[in-house]
Image (tube, rainbow, N blue to C red; front, top):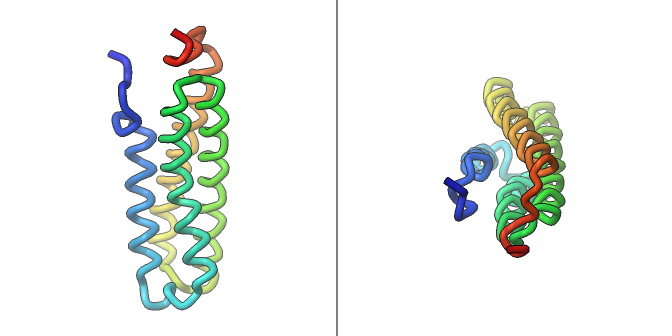
Length: 128
């Protein structure tokens, strides 16, 4: 069965879970005062979800791949920002490690989806 909506994608579901987690972490009193980092890490997490959904909705595999690459880049950005938060003692190491592991899993899932799209002969729904 073909995926009809971006909400059905496991990669999007994990991105949503991570975004929820990032928002929770950045609500901590120690974290909230660093407005720049809070804004940047939240925007990066929303970027992952948004790029997956926007790329999917474009209806073409080439465009979808491009958006997935952007989402993958944002995964790396979030991981980097979590290290900054850890170094500033905004979050505990256990919290950072848990989030980083999810982000690594998401990055792998994004890469696998990109590779699958590269191998596919199907160009996308808009080309039917």
